[in-house]
Length: 172
Image (spheres, rainbow, N blue to C red):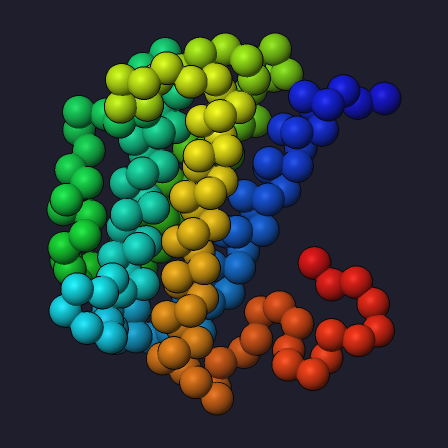
C-alpha cells in the first residue's frame, strides 16, 4: 500500500510527463518559423517560452535540495529575448531541462517532501516548491498550445477532446 507522499510523487511525475508530452505534440506541429512567431512585439513566441522553461528548470532542479532555486548562472532576462535558435537546439535545451526535473523528482523520497529548500531566498517546503513548478509549467504549456493553435488554425491537430466530441466517456 502506498502512502500519501509516495502517491504525491507518483502523481507529480505523471503530471509533468503529461505536460511535456502535450507541449511536444504542439511543438511537433510547428515549423521552425512558427516557433519564432509572435502576435505582437510584447508577446512571447513558443521558442521564447521553451527557452524560459529550460532556463527555469536548469536553475530550479540543479542541486535542488541544497542550493537556492534561482542560481547565479541564470540570466532570466535573456530567456525572453529572441535568440532565433534552431528547432533542434531549442529541443535539446528543452530536453536537458526536463531531464534535470525528472532526475531530481525520481531521486526524492517521501521523507523529502517536508524538507526546506529556498527559492529566491525564501524558505519553503519541497512540496511547495514542486507545486510552484507545476503551476509554472502548466501555465506556459497552456501558452504553447494556445500560440500553436493560433498559428495553425484549422490545420491544428487537437491534443485533447475535439469540439462536439465530449460525450461518451471520461477523457483526461
